[in-house]
Length: 77
Image 1 (cartoon, rainbow, N blue to C red):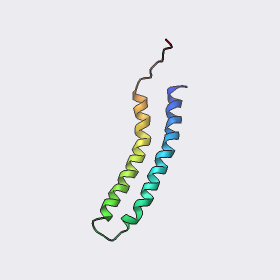
Image 2: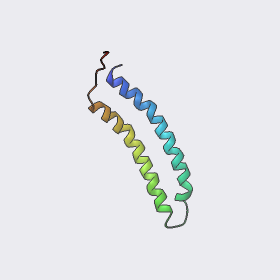
Image 3: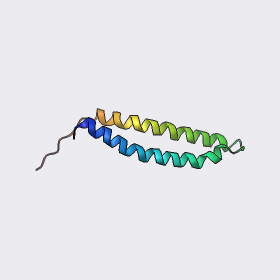
Image 4: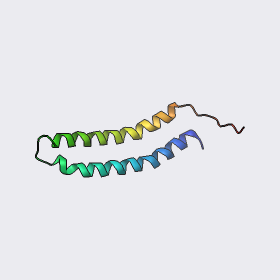
């Protein structure tokens, strides 16, 4: 399989799992973010922002990382 196609296919497969995990965590943090307690709410908002940014960066970062790594050849010895 060509490298471009492998990067595209691998990114799509992994991205769905990352998105679903992030959405589950964000859904669990929403009640804490809506809490009127001034100590809990900001922490939940920061965690939600971190999950969103890491989800987006994982989509971009993974593809870039594999594009920069030179392909290796496997020998059958």
